[in-house]
Image (cartoon, rainbow, N blue to C red):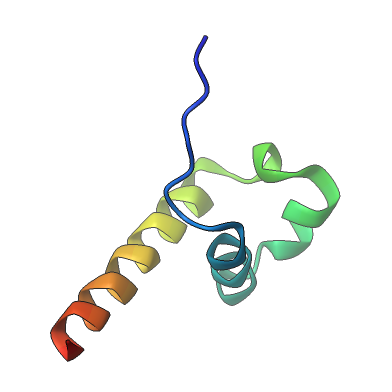
Length: 57
């Protein structure tokens, strides 16, 4: 099985996890411990931030 390369930086992932309220789970269990819903919400928020940054450019 091949491992996918992360598109988001670790710093961004950690900030999103903090903002969305599941950073404690990441610290205790690692990224594999988060719910699929939380991962989806993290991706949605990252897309929102990227769209906002693109509009400002």
